[in-house]
Image 1 (cartoon, rainbow over the protein chains, first blue to last red):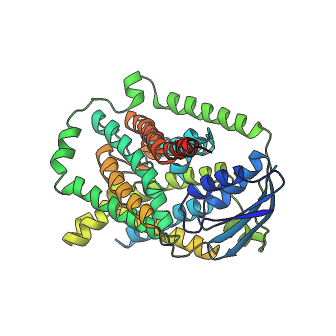
Image 2: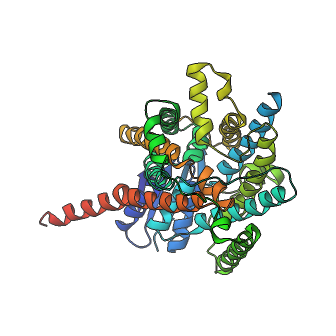
Image 3: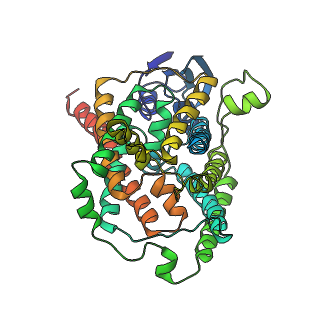
Length: 74
Length: 353
């Protein structure tokens, strides 16, 4: 199961805040894909995922100032 | 004039570049101390302060220029810094942060910047000047911490430097989690400059060095000061509407340089795009900008002028301002991030299943 969270246009720290909320609603082992365009999120979102013990299964830049990261819930 | 333009733009561009690539965000740093109990960015700021302090007092010691801490407008510093702290949470970045995010193409930051420049100018030479002057009349004689304590400045700088060194040692010794990064597409210098994730402490060292460099460059043009954002930002608007050349100084080119340096960094790393905020963010950005301008003008500095420079000069103004600025960000964080979520939870629980 994969859930997609589209937070393009949201400024920091809201993409991270939304991602933290969204991951509560999925089961362990399921994936959450976050699409975001706030530059600071490229640091804060993977850092949070790593520190919380989730696994980052994909992380890519989609284009000019646009990124996608997929986090597998621990 | 040419020298002022060139060195100001150069110093600003370096700072803008480093802050954009290093994601050096003090607002986020202060906020996360409260929201996630994460002090990493605050420690990074302390590193930048310590480096600048040692560098600038060495320059003063060998006689490159003189520094006088002046008096302390205590009430203005406390109230102004607290309001500034609230403002930067709403604006989504401190004064410098807003300048460099404007360079990333964030229209919300352009709007915050407009509010910030407007309110700073209103306080400095506009209709609120009498209020600004009145609050600043309450003054304490000694702004220098060393003078109050009756010790040599180097004792303070030394103790602070050691304390920061200890904090850095303790932080770096902690076991690290590996932070997943983007797959590198470039190599060599291009990778380091335009792709690689910079450690906040490395960024902090660079910010500290640029802050030292700012002093002699600025002094050479007759402006006895280091990095400063608020007065120069107001000066741009004052110059534009009055045409008075006296508003133009080294700081004006410094802040324009921050914008250009960040624009260059963002363009080169594929991180520039015009991004339009939604209505709520737009209103937050503008009101945050107004509070930033009001607060920073009253406090005599923003998170750079007071938080990075006046702290390094070991003045009461710098450290009191930093403390109240942080308190302001925590207060605003509670109302912007914590309370809305608590309320949302209560409503979901109230609905019978």
